[in-house]
Length: 424
Image (cartoon, rainbow, N blue to C red; front, side, top):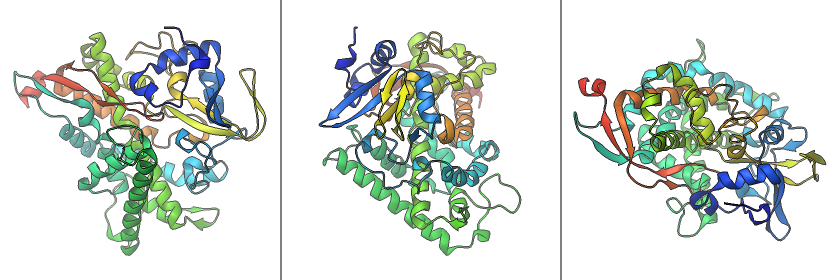
């Protein structure tokens, strides 16, 4: 299929649900790696599709700011969370906000909860009958995976997980028919944001009513440093002052959205890839490839499809002049399939080496929870391989209708148990 850059509409969520964005991105990388996308009237943005240029846009905060909005859903509007939420705050203030959370989100925090996370994963994956098979929706089973790990880290009750997943999806996939309200995309975004902020407002008020020392430590933090990530936000100081209540709520929202939406979509993408090529058993029987396979799953899925920035000053990208104030959208999914960086990018290769993917972003806004995400995915795939000897996709996947979220929302599968599972 021939794609002409002039015919491309990367702002259309239907492209990602029903079309072929990878072919479109490939054409843009070859012929127009930095191209203008008109949306309406004078509103538009520059699309950046090559790995090197995407990495530069994300890493060069001196030239590209995050403080005017980071998602296409906010194109042309100011982000109300600017300088209050890490995701929409530039260095140096961003770095001072990030440091306390980064300490709490270090790899050992997730490892301290490994058994709890593993048990939660087992609850998500239904057991096939001994010697038989089971059919279920694999994507639906994975939907609560992020809350299995994020729930303990934020101190969120298990009973609230389905509601929080639903609200997070309303905020990240507002065009998707599974999550859109009858009032349309704007009503969906407004309702999702309002209810999530109200939820965290109640949570924070409850924390303020109880002394931190009255609750057991939920994280693997140093002795004397008790509490979860909400406690960290409530007690941290930036520029000599505590975060305001609005800043605490905004960052709780960002943590939930960052993990609660994207992480769940990595396993379905991997399973669909592996089953399509008949290579599920190849990876399942190679524990030495668990780590590299997780990195490949992240590259192939690229669950956060894009991030947006605005040019602080005139910039030249791939020979194209970008004016001060122009919106620039860096397509992570395209960068992670750039042939100049990844040989045979459309092939899922669990043994791929030198896999410097950008699934977690780059630069100062590199995902603070990347370590936790990696631990969670390693635990998930290890449990998946221990539980199912075979997985067969039994129907067409349904992909999210979203410019931001790259994910499979429904994936019917048939599974058969391993001998180890039968013996349990």
